[in-house]
Length: 71
Image (cartoon, rainbow, N blue to C red; front, side, top):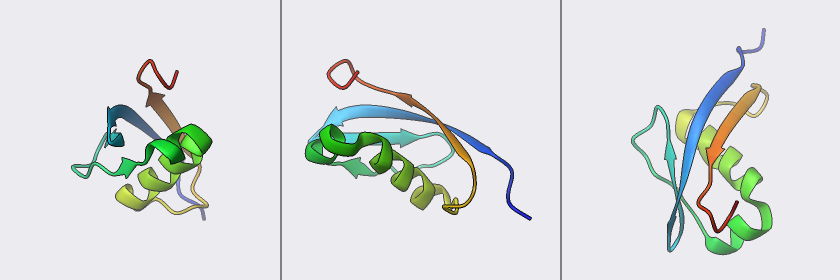
């Protein structure tokens, strides 16, 4: 039986790249500027799953708050 859908709010903050403030975690992974420009959604999904221990097969909805330069 698969796990229930997870919904996570993520704030993307400019740094030397972008820091992810992930609801429910004290970790703040960094996504490089290059990764953010090329494939932000995949990078955010990967980091959220790694930090919160959510398996790839678990449905996940992300509410991502972007800074103006990425919106």
